[in-house]
Length: 162
Length: 206
Image (cartoon, rainbow over all chains, first blue to last red; front, side, top):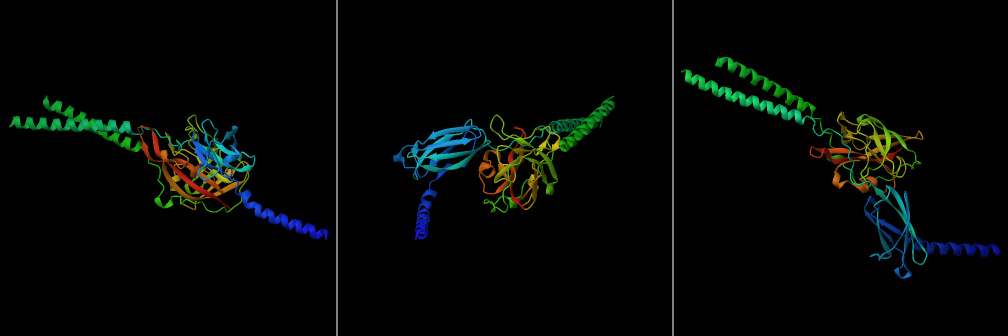
């Protein structure tokens, strides 16, 4: 009889857990965008926090940071949001853990602070061959000009000799 | 007398012409060949393939080998400069590549990033031929724990530096990925820089 009670209790527990699990899984924190160049802004959103229960707190931890950010606005799709400016952040991956105003957990998410733009990975000399080409062109031009003048002078001399 | 003067003039003109031709030839020879551009058919297709192998624990990479283009180079950790731009190994060591140390190590879940010069004042550098890589080519990374992470190239893209695909390179990924970065495209003599970055996208394979 006792074993039967335990079994029934366990079954009820499992059933309740199954029913409640989707609700717990919905507790979600979103960081958008998921990566930003250092100095960029990301928006932190706790989608399940009820604005009426008070501000949400986003705890941001990472390479050189452990700070709390308070939500400032109600998110358009539900929940609460805050903007986070990443100037001065060390490059790397940060974790955001959100807690709603009623003290319930709103999950966590990560975002990455990246270098700005592409990589300056070329190192050739900007003047490669340009000076030499220009000097060569100038000399060739002088030679051509001289040849034209010389040819004209010869023609004049030949005409005068006739 | 006039004929003697003419003879001198002809000699000077011939000298100018010969020297000019020589300098033009030397100038053309000194202008380096441009790095290869990735073909349109090898551009990355977007969604990365599903994870095929379990991720490795963190271990710093020590060298990179790319048999298809004859690369074997030591790796040094790099970060970002004072302006927040990705650091590149010093130009005096053009045969060395850099590993972006604020990201994951090659083989961990996420995108590990390697960067290397395309050229230097001395000529082609470690990643000069990245643009020649084709999907399926392999990249092998030896790690400090003596393990080797092998990656297969998914695609190669060329991007203007002011439209660098930050998310695709540094963004989150559920697979162990690898990104190789160098310069490419047109060389802007005014700024002394290439206008594009060539990026190789690869995924870890068994």
